[in-house]
Every structure is written in C-alpha cells, then in structure tokens.
Image (cartoon, helix red, strand yellow):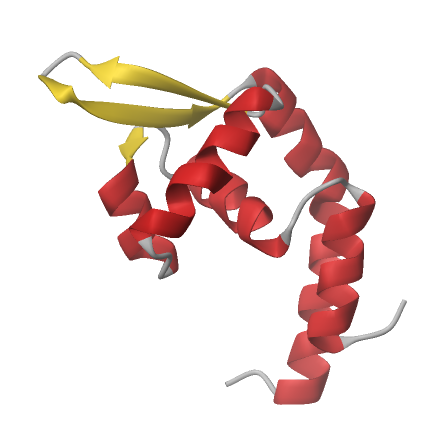
Length: 108
C-alpha cells in the first residue's frame, strides 16, 4: 500500500467510500445525533458539500437522519448498524494509513 494521501484515498475506495464520506462516518461515531451544521464545523466541510455526501450515505444505509424532537426544523444524523460495521472493517486500514502519515509528517 502506498503512503500519504494517495494511500488513504485508495484505502477508502476499497470500502466504497470517498475520504469525505469516511470522515463523516468517523465523526458520527464520535458525535452521534449531531446536526449538519455542527458536523460541518467539526470536520471543516462546506454545508453545500455535506448535503449530497449525507444523502449518499443515507441511501447506502450507512447513516440515518431523524427530526430533532427539540427543534422540528433540524435533522440529526447518526450511524446505522451498517455504518458502524463498515467503520470496524475499515479500522485496520485507517490505522495503517495514519501510521504512514505520522512517519512522513512526524508526530507533531
């Protein structure tokens, strides 16, 4: 496996994901039931980009959107069981790529 960003793109592609989709799934694991604006802020994603990414993940049954009971205008996003399982399968590759990136860039 090649290192750096190219290696990460290839690894994500092996799971049928873009790197942006992986970032969204990874963030939703850490922040379940998060709204789109907060999600975008956490990962530095433009809101106009987030909408099609979340739609694709929802269509692929990796993410679910629910209405916020406290504010009916907001939608909350969470991983599905399939989304969690995909992240588990991808974890060894993500760890390997992170290690390669640290080797190239250093710990700092």
